Image (cartoon, rainbow, N blue to C red):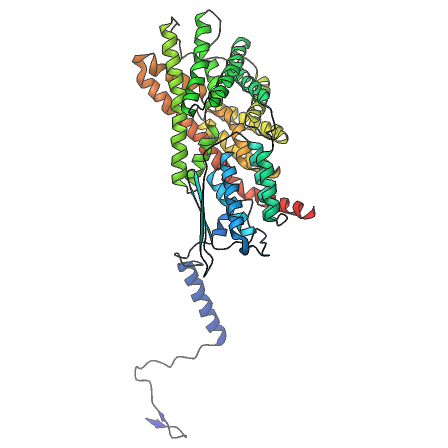
Length: 495
């Protein structure tokens, strides 16, 4: 052991290894950065159990990053919550999905300055819990008990929420505008809706391959079922029996005309007649709710949809049995029909059919032509993928994806929710003819029960495929529509 000049001992390393050189400052920084990157890769940006801010639910919706109004809102929080619940009730009544209702409520309460808000939607009920720190919480609930066809009102509510989020509308003005939307008349009178029912059935029968005679029968029978449905509503008849009676009437008329010697194809007439009875909007909303994480709401709407399908099937079955007892000839439901018109005439008929659907759903006038254009593109997609050999089940689903994607782009561009454009445009994809054939095989041809059950399962798969395709198209279009809401807000600020 040697001794240093200062008297300290200079001991050699006991392990026989050379001494470690001290790290330079640049090396220390590199090591720290490497550790941070490693921890970020392993742990993520936030702890996995961190609660999600409710405003984060607005990501991907037209109401992302709302403008917050903070002037004296908390002092009247009860009024703001009442308005949000009233807004949600109106949206549900007009046919909106649970996700759209939830995002609208979150956007409105956030824009009007309420923090610490939780929203819960369960089937027909909407609840808001407002729990500010060190204050008494407020919990309010609203139940939706009625529905109506009013896509124009739904589009106006969407525009109202957009204006609130943009910061251009206060609560008092929002309450006034919502009341005006509720009190305002629907765009089309009842007689026009009744005529639209008949026009849709007539032109769609032509698309399926029926001639002028079949289209005329479909027109008249749908006028009658529209009048019958309106009268049953006045008598407060349950929706199940209302739908069953309408399906019975359109099927019985077609069978009796065939029994009387009129040269028509009853299956085509019935297919055109029951298509507007199918709960398309409700089914799309239920699939959307299931995908977006609202299982209870989706289950309730699925049950309601199944009951409506059951009512249609029951009405067709009773009409077929009664018609057979009265001497109607047994039909050949396996018969196929060639196209009665060339493709370009079919395209015109499809456009007219979509416009007629828009009238029956009380869509705004300015949305009719864009909706018809989306329906036409969906029809051409259906024809193209069918020619490519994708099959009868996959082709409608692919066309529904196109309709869902274009429907979101067009709807947001015109200040409306996607459902308002996509549902009328996609109604032409539903298998009304398959439903009638399957029901006929189940009720009349006892030896073809398996064929009928298989046909019903096939029709159900097509319907679910169309609904899921619309939702998928809506999700695929979200990256393409991020700028549409911001453009809408800029227009609001310039007013």
